[in-house]
Length: 451
Image (cartoon, rainbow, N blue to C red; front, side, top):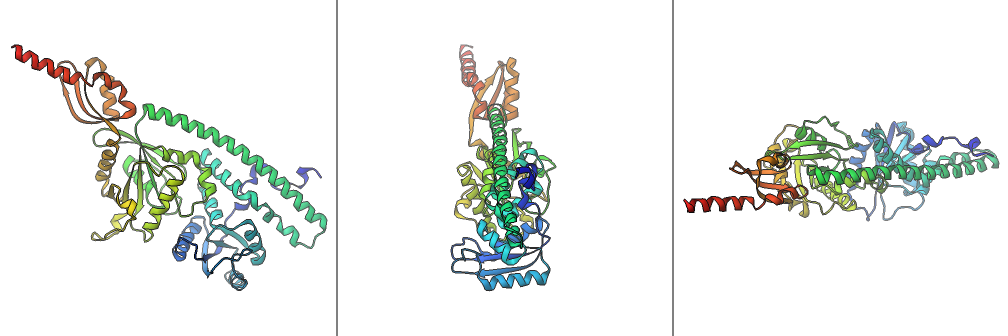
């Protein structure tokens, strides 16, 4: 039989067919086992937020505490029956598990519960698919979906084996799985090739920007910590803001001028979350490399969250995974406007050693202090300059004003005297005039002695 005669999904829309929709009404399932490094109730609270972001109404939640998970269905038979009864009682069209299921577990659970089953990874991929607006964002999400779909193709055709059809029907399903698998692999290779072009383009752009552009400051943090609101406050930008997880997926960069006149590029990045799927981290490598090569990271923290410590540690873990763990970093403790003034925030040890500022991106509190702290932390990476620029080299004075921080400026007989700090990539042209100040002072001192 020709391939096209049994192929149901076209190559163009095959990616994401397992993730095409979220259920409308769902029950949340948490599994508490000794190896978990998260609190099951708090994690289910976050799963509910994720589900609501995807447009799902959560009608109930079930927690199973186990010494070790069942290899086939994760849960015991009694708990499975309880969930099946709840699905009927609440008239649900799906259940959502708060962990990543193996393909075998996925298939078996859907067969036993007779309803749509999605796991935490699938839910996050659905949200990313809903939120990606740029071509690059869509490519990255599609690649992550393909990676997720490949080992789960058999699940799409498991209904054939449950029908009372003939052996021919089952054989047709097996052929369809092989066809889809080949198409997905081909699609995966094409997506990787396209994303490699994107990555190369970004890399060249970063090199040009580092050689000629302003310092790059990246806003990083847990999803819904207020990064986009902070970008809008600092840069008068119009980044999309919504009180939902992963409201911003596509990064936005804006110019910001610090108090000393120095210009920086401020980038809002995709938010992180606990147990961020590795397929997403890999697919979003081109975007996340922007973070790994930033001159300064501003870790925006939701100081009002009861899970603040865990969120900080989750962000630190992702930063390590993408090679940004050693970048210079400071903390912006956001949403302090909803905290009482006398509250003491308990931070993880590593985070408590970082420079930090309390801010309210929504109300504008602490913004001046934040800009000053950004400036001070960038200065640690800058080169100290004390130069006398000839009047016929006005472009260097303009360059100093644009990218540097000026502590002193005066107009001498032979040129403009500037003292301050410049990014290392811009300091080269000034080396010729570094000693001119001292020479000018010596000339003035000698002429006084002669008179």
